[in-house]
Each structure stands twice: as structure tokens, then as C-alpha cells.
Image (tube, rainbow, N blue to C red; front, side, top):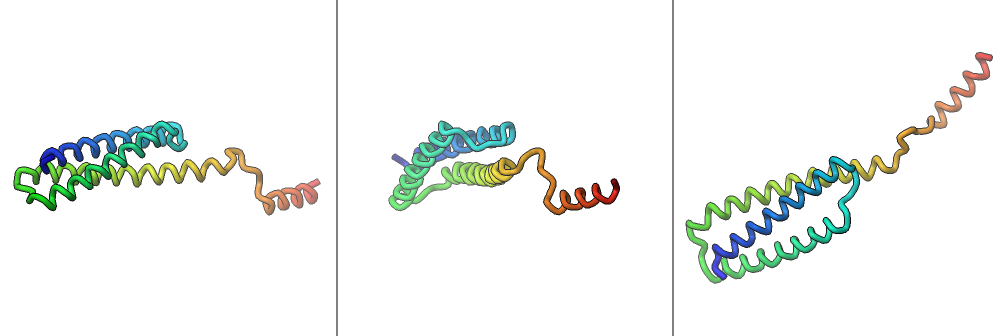
Length: 126
């Protein structure tokens, strides 16, 4: 496979990963919970494909010099990877917020010190 073909395949995988990250982002914003098992399985499969294309790129770059015709494609791929990384960072933050908020009751019980103050105040005002 030529470098150009390998880059095109790599771009497709990156585009699919970006779409998956967008889907995960929408799910985290709407439902405030981690991705389901099907989405995580798709992510694992795409990451395996990404690893394969990266290996192919390394071997094709070692065997032939990438020409000027591949530069625009390489720049597109770099741009897409940056988008994926930014979206993934946002997804991590959303996931962290969602996991932290699950541990807190929406109706929090009064803190022990506040309860004690209310008890004392209740005694003196009666």
C-alpha cells in the first residue's frame, strides 16, 4: 500500500474517531453518565484500527519518502487529531463532573455543625 493510500485510510479512521468522540460528548452532556458498553467497544475497535494505520504509516515512511502531494493530507489529519484530543479532554471533564455529582444527594442533609446550632437555637428560643 502506498503512503497516500495509507494516509487516506488513516484519515478515515481519525474521522470515525472524531464522530465517536462527538457522540460520546453529546451523551455526556445530555444524560450525564458514562458511555454505554457498545460505544466503548466501538472505541476499542477504532483504536485498534488506528494502531494498525500508524504501524502502516511508519513502515511506508521508512521505505519511501513522502512527497509534497501528501502534505495537505497530513495537515488535515493533524488538524483532525487536535480536534479529537480537545474533544476527548472535554469528555474527560464531563465524565469527571458526572461521576462526582453521582456521589452527592440532590437534597443534602444538614451538616452536623449546622444541625447542632439549630438544636441549640431551638432550645433557647422556646
